[in-house]
Image 1 (cartoon, rainbow, N blue to C red):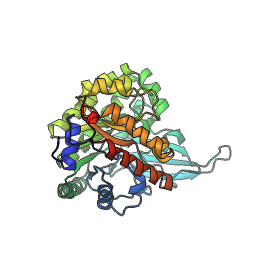
Image 2: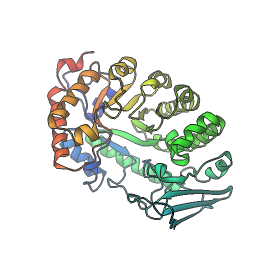
Image 3: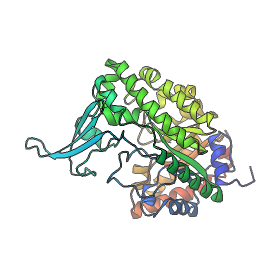
Image 4: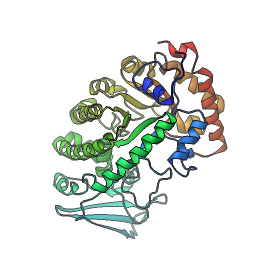
Amino acid sequence: MTTEMSSRERMLAAINCQVPDYVPCCFMLFGSLRSKCADQTEFVERQIEMGLDAFVQAPMRSARGSRTDSEHQNLHGLPVRFDPRVEVKNWREEAPDAPYPLIHREYSTPAGKLHTVVSETDDWPHGVRVPLFDDYVIPRASKHLITKPDDLPALEHLLTPPTAEDVAACREGTQVAKDFAAQRGLLVVGEWGVLFDAACWLCGIQDLILMSVMQPQFVRDLLAIIHEWNRLRMAVVLEGGVDLLIRRAWYETVDFLSPPVYRDLILPLLKEDVTQAHEAGAKLALITTTAYTPLLDMYLESGIDVLIGLDPVEDRRADFALTKQKLGGRVCLWGGVNGFVTVERGSQEEVREAVRAALHQLAPGGGFILSPVDNVREDTEQASANVSAFIDQWRAQRLRPEIQRP
């Protein structure tokens, strides 16, 4: 193709597994840059200046996240609201026989109490509080929040539908995002769906794995509650008319679930999420970075549009050739280069070679978006130089004929 597309047209062509004017480069996450920006507008504008195919998040949100009061630091999008009748208490317990003090959180709900306990390690970022959804909780919890079927009625009081105020704020923020994106010709991305990742935050990964085998009905019931809560949140984001909705699935892999268990517990609900997105005129992307290769056939069956997170370093078992063979032409692939080891800590030549390899393996025939996976967090001289090398190599290769041919 010779006619230059807008960034949105280029990204949509890739998402639709078509051949755009050139392979788009869109950083799925870019923490080092985001932390230096006052708001999302500046964050997007600076990416455009770098030549990247930036997207606009809907609803618009601050570039700098805060861990001081969020219940969902690791789940972007609408706030997490509790039933107003729920009372929450946090307290610290000095534990002489333990290596760290213990932080307790107790929820008193109309259906009973829920209680969790975590170790206040030196890197614990939340002070004397335990957020509902956060990656820091999983490895530090000595008592997870949800441990048995009797806990589920109380959980429903913590996973309530968006309030009227939240819906209004989301609509307003999404319109702002769409107006800004239209001015710049950019993709609009809704944030975020979730299923098994939320269950891991609530139950702990190890316990949840065991329960998925030994108490599958309990896990089905738990996932049904999360799925219904997520469905209502997705509906609010989708009604704004986003181009793409991203669904978290970092823990939703065969590192933790066998393929038969995935088929039983996850696939039916994923299909419903895909249908909901498609009925709203949006595409659905699954974001996951390891142990996904045995799930490729089920991804096809689910109908997802994009698989975000192909990483040759974090998952050395990843088979890019097989992934392209199975998903090419039907599911867009987004990623290709490791962020932490290669871009943040590698040499410039290692970065360039990684970009060359990703484009060679994943770009031919279209349906590919280049990105470090899944983030560039470090704001160092080396990381900055490597980001420049990454972009320079992409520019040098993106129009070559072999990148366009299958």
